[in-house]
View (cartoon, helix red, strand yellow):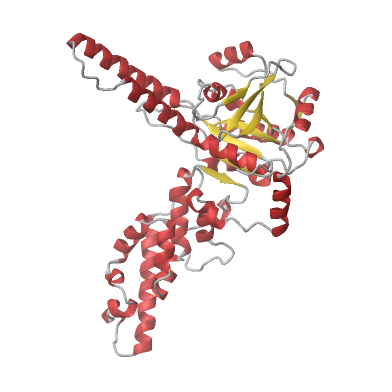
Amino acid sequence: MAGIERTPESAVIRRLKRFRDKYLMSLWNDTRNVQHPGNVDENTATGCSLNSLPVDVQFRIMALLTPQDLCRLGSTNYYWRSVVRDPLLWKYFLLRDMPLWSSVDHTSMPHLEALEAPICKDEEDPSQDFMADYLRGSPACRRQWQPPRPAYKAVASFLQSLVVPTEPRFAMFGPGLEQLDVSLLEKLMFSPDVLPVAGIPQRQIGGIGSGISFTFNDQHRFNILTLYSTNRTERERARIEHQSVQSKLFVQDDPNYNITPQVQEVCRAVDGFIYAANAEAGRDGERHKEEAQIRAMLDEALGSSSRPILILSCMAREEPDGARTRTPCVNMARWLNLEHLANPWMAVVAGVFWVEGTKILKQQFIAQQKRKSKNNTTHDHLPAAEFANQVQDTVAESLSGLLDGIAWLLKGCGLRL
């Protein structure tokens, strides 16, 4: 995590060793049949041969367990319950795993200020529970930690299900729509097996945006109204020349932004927002500007603060060695100060670099076909059907984060998925 010191494994191991020594000392005081805690039979003391292992080996084992398995281990006896609940252990897990989370939202964002505190403290901070932060924030555990829905909300949801739902509308904007080498919207439109297009209205708002309807899970229609800063020609020229353009969406009023009257009408009409953030390297200086523009769109004078906003952490480039550059969604949420928004929000990783993977697969396919023709053989290393399947798998993988975000948006609009 950028800006947060990584908890070293040695600090966690030292803390666990101090606890075990203290635990064995307490057993020695209780039994009074030995003179040194090191002489205590640890198998007898803990009732488990696992505890006789060195502390560093115990730590390696715990590092390989899932959060659910760790909690089950903590339910075996007092020793493991205390070890598993150690705050420094979960602080280590948080800093290790947060960069890999596919999403984070307003209910699961960890307390990053507490993570920045010094790591080597003997006293515990009762106001911070890193274990709860992890279980609440990790996408794999988040559903189990969701609070139960109140009875009145269940009744309201049932009544809403009796009404024919309207097609939710979302305003989509942000530099991730315009500055990337790969168009996110085009990938959505040409991925029918992932998110089918239900309709393309032939309309624009002052030449700025157009609405496209999609179908989610083959039953729920929703509309995305794309808001670009300027027309396509100016956007392409600015992207190629790496220059900024004069936005037709916002009017700058340092240090704030106001949105133009025609865009205000859009904000009053939509049910939520999608912000496509450019998560590629070198844009740290633009985050304050992006934060101000998000706040302008969410102005309570233009609509309810209950409308959700989905933040897409988009990128289209790869490292020279072929590795994918992935900006953690927790970083993006922090850079944009999403915690201070009144609206519900979710940040997801939505890479659009699948085109690069498609090009590689296509090149492999063409090369193998040439070798096949040259050698006059019928052996096909990569059949056309397999090639298509691999391409589609790559598409689905890169858009999975976006689909999770769309599902969250639709639920926020009252739809039952």
